[in-house]
Picture 1 (cartoon, rainbow, N blue to C red):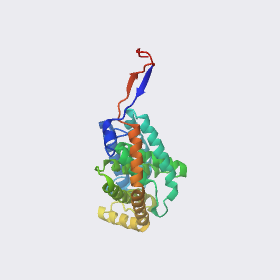
Picture 2: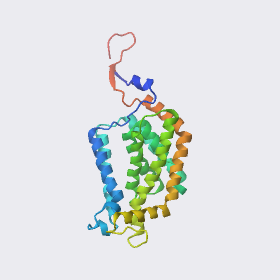
Picture 3: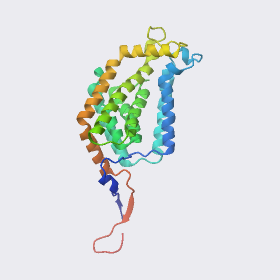
Picture 4: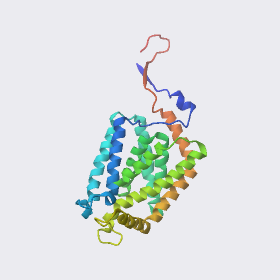
Length: 290
């Protein structure tokens, strides 16, 4: 008979704020995330960087094409991350937080930018690491879209945008106490605005076509198209982006200390990085291992 022993590492007991990696990224995983992120930059920003002489420069088919490619690329990254074997406790934690995030998202329903899911991605990525934050962002947006019926060509872009938010939270420098809360609140504000701008960039040619006053103009100078895009963003979504940023600031400021403490306590008990050891169990009164 054997018994499973998973003692928590001494360093996690002695230093609650120490970095925890629920999902450890290997070099190939980092390379996959980097490659998909670069592809994502192209998918989001093609109206500003595409060569006017190409087919994409004269049509709005690019968002649809990238919508087909992005799920495949995200699947490759998730498969690469899980190839080394995800800790079952990390999977359980990922499932719980994804479910909570999916349930939180319809609360604000995006009205006036009141999106209540991003603060959880930020705090989860902060506690469990960049790899966990990346996966959490993708799975949470996917699960919430299934619940709300928000599945469409925009979903892969939303998943990648949210994955970046979680990834960035895990890469922030280590701080403690009020300084950490202030850092996370500031990050929530910046990431909330940038998420909206990125999604705007994806929607821009798709929604305005090629003939409107604020539309993408094939072959126009970068400055001209950038000006049109900024005017489009100010006119359509600036209020939502600011609302998302303020929502992140308020939720992180009000709940950040409690949620961080709770997640870190759960991480210490889970002991993600503790080595698994099998020891022989002994029956009382006997010196023979069984």
